[in-house]
Length: 214
Length: 407
Image (cartoon, rainbow over all chains, first blue to last red; front, side, top):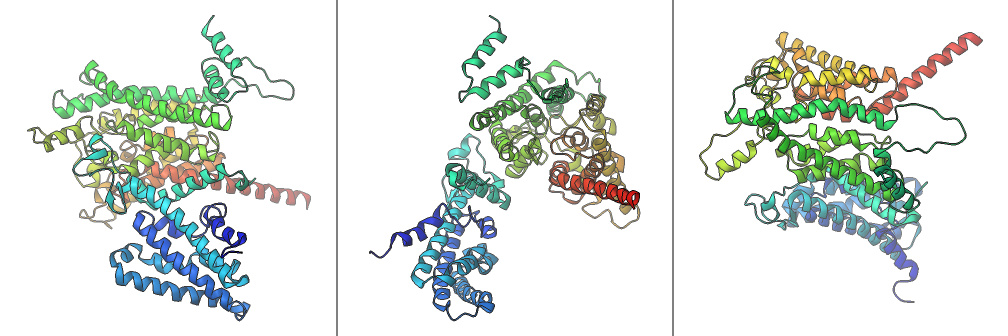
């Protein structure tokens, strides 16, 4: 047996598609709507959740036998809060502009349903290695959707990707703008993020018949 | 062999195939199908969905034709080439020149609206294997009437695709939609491309192009086509008198300026029992009540002339009905039978709140000088809730009566 058994691989690949935290479980929607207007913010948010969920799952899993079940939510909150504060401070130190863009949403990772959900559903009942894989899988699943949404919103809303103009210059009227194209301001508003997420869910469910509910 | 037989043959040929719905739709659009239902009970009625929709379209045609004349009239008036028309039958209004300019601008809007919208409908019908639904017939006519005359056609296409898919098809097509598709299309345009949907340039054909020419260094006078709401919102004086507003000789979206023709359309809809008079009347009532409240606030001196709301708040309450598109919204948008309330009591509440909220948005949010479409979309969402409570209230009342009787 190698490093990853078949079951372990499934822990990572499942949340990427058929059990995606955003599109299938519909968790963590608030942050997905709020910060995906830019691809860069989406990426950083994805990495932040990856860090918090990966480590948090391991910590909770290690402590799972000594946490009294009556106060387990509080213990989980403390673990998440500690990790989120680390992320927040690192961002403030090295990426101040970006941390202002993300504003409260880094802090709100604490209340992100995906994290509490994985702690409750997985880390409390599984060993540290499997919990780590599960955390990584779910966080990557979350990040992938964030990046897809961020890609379309930034491309259609601002005409840029990672802040680099790809469709030409809207003021100088070069590239696509020369023939009358204009940026879609609606894409920068949160309602459009909800619609984009909805379209992703639509495509995913119509491709995979197993996901269709009656 | 006539067209009818040919269509019938094509229909038979494709029966059971993937493209069948598309050919069926062509056939039933032009001719009444001669299939009869067998067995069971059936309701016999002359007015099917298609007939209802055609009635609405008939009511809209005068607005469309007026809109074409008006587009040309506003264009030439702004250029200073013709004199003001002074009344509905003014000599400088109903001219061929005006009509040609208007036709050149408005007809493409109609063609794009119908072309793109029906393409989406056909596509979804083929994918779903359903029959093509008639739902887009009215929407396709409404859309060109509620956009500025100079809107780029590609923007309109994008908005139509969005509106039909997100506003209607995702909910299951005609009859299942929560939001009015035409207003969804307008809302999309409004939020996506605000520079093309508001301001004082877009309402007169040629004003934007003229601005670009000036920016490029040509020595020309800028055209300004500020709408009445725009002037009021900035506490400016309004250059139009009430009769201009009533007849519709003012800049605005293509088909919503002539209150006179909208009232005729409304009477036609009410007479044919296609539009609900309850909704139309209660919407206007709601608008009047909100206008009266604002007038009261101004009269009581709670708000000074320096306030940014003063301009719109001090508009005499009845004038709110002839400026902006409240009348058009009340007659053609709010009455959409799918998205409105179904119960009679519900219709009163639904309409009243539309009027009330429209004027509230109009006055309080200068960024959205026209709040009618937002108010209608909002109440579309609440319509089922209103119906639910009306029905529940009725059930409760009857239960009580039953108890009194049996006790």
